[in-house]
Length: 399
Image (cartoon, rainbow, N blue to C red; front, top):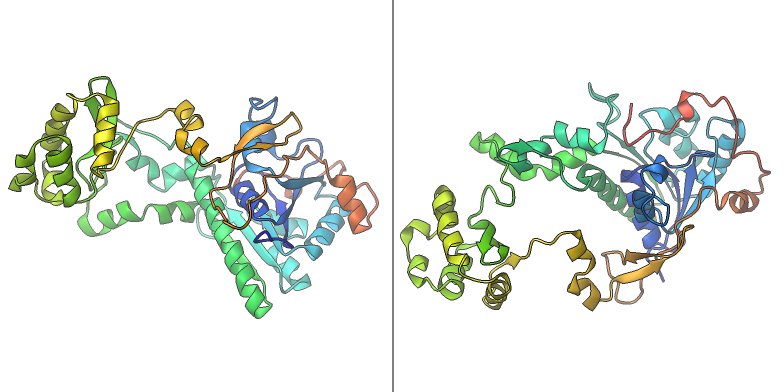
């Protein structure tokens, strides 16, 4: 039995944060009904056309879902959405603040109809406060939360290479939904949950926040290095670089004594503790770099691994796709899409008794007629002109 078999989720979603959460719910066995705007759908469908003519974000985030086209600004669309919500266990949305309420689908209204319903609303900065109506794309939240100030090199700030504010938000939504469903099993009562992108990202900033609050220091942009650990960086070899991350003083001793052949450094009081090594970071990095440059990358990685010193190659994305660990653990599966089958990674939560499904990526409106028939409703809810602003989809938290 799949963990969430029998759970139905209504998703009024687009872009990344909400679709990530609902895709994982679908992976775990929930039925996810994705409401999309007629003729356009989730605007992430149009980000690019790299995967058999389909957008890479959409293929990544929307497998295993059913797509229904609804004009939520029309009476028929609202009637259909309420009918779906009345049969659902969970409703997740990431429209602009207040948009679901203006549509007649706000958390208060939905839970008046169903006390046991779990309603999750995603916003950029929360539903109140001075930033409540600001636009909140992933990049903007990374910047506003201080994440960009600690990401990049000393010369230039950067956002992360993947949308971590969106991803953090989606994972907190996933966690909250599962917690709310577990509580409902015990109490019979649902939940109203709010998750903001800004607060999700702020939570991930805990380490630099504590340094700022209690040591009055701004964590520097360290590139591949680490503000609180040394040696922790990419070090040169004869034919490239290897990342070495010593986490404790035992690791330091193993690195210099067993891997690099300098047992005298293990007993050198200048480098005996991590605090002392961080204080002499430039000196330590130069010392280690001089020693590693005498090794080939493969030889050095094997020596580091043999002696239990954390290390890694700096792969590009092709290196990830072809990674021997993914192949050895049989993590790749074929996923059906409207443009043809694509490769996809199994969900990272592995249950030993059941393989989590990787259902098809839906075409826009693919399940509209079937869902309407299931609900006993006539067609017509999928279209309608003159939809007002309350019915317009926006990005996560967009104002």
